[in-house]
Image: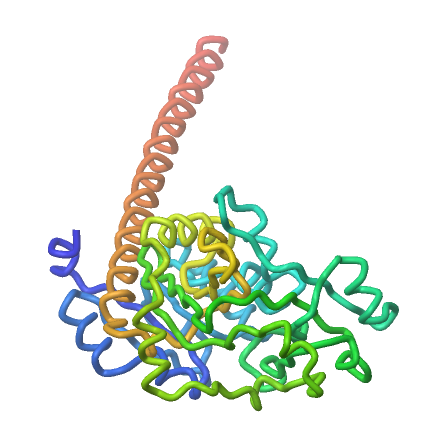
Length: 346
């Protein structure tokens, strides 16, 4: 479909904070997309969106109320243009209380989320641990999940002594040993790429008795050398592609999003047990090898959706016009009949 579409130009406007531009728009993507009929155009954040364009689609990573209003105005003026993605769907991923709810709705065997608990100021951390039946080690995560530094301040608790002094509200999540490797799955519409990344090493029973009760993630370092880490990554079997694709498909439908990634681990004790531990909206795609071949097909799919919308819109307008003409003719005939009847009456 891209060959026929490439004869046209598909215009994508992107609205990103300056710090996010380099993680999405690089020369390689710009050129790769352009060669296939897709023009990536920066949106001027100092000007109203409705005064810019035209855009067949708008990709964005902005969330304030002013921008929300601009998207609404743009959509009213350009009803067939596609916004990637809806703000109400994105917002669910900014709260770790609701972030993993979509995973619970998936009908996929051997896929779970870790035991976790939201702890507010009215409940003690130990009570939450006991109520949920969680076991140490635990990870503490901020409730808010966004691009701010505070959202990434996480801690590992080896035992209950580490919970002392931790402030709520907070999310507690049970740590599952997973061999020190995490699967990062990047989704761009129907297109998926899974990569292996270094993660926290498994924690032994002996380690749980360590004198360090609470460890910030920033201070957790692997004791493995680069060489041993490389061997570990190579030896770790990738999650089955068919499984990853099915999880991604169902998750995308449940989330109603085009652009996201999720972190998935495989239980060291059960090779058939996978857990999703985190989902992020509009991640740094440029970290993915050959990410251009992931995003450009997504652009082209959206271009096709836009063309379908345009066609349906034209058909609807034509139908409305025909209906109005037919209705108008009938009205004209009725008016003539009335006029004739009145004339004959005189």
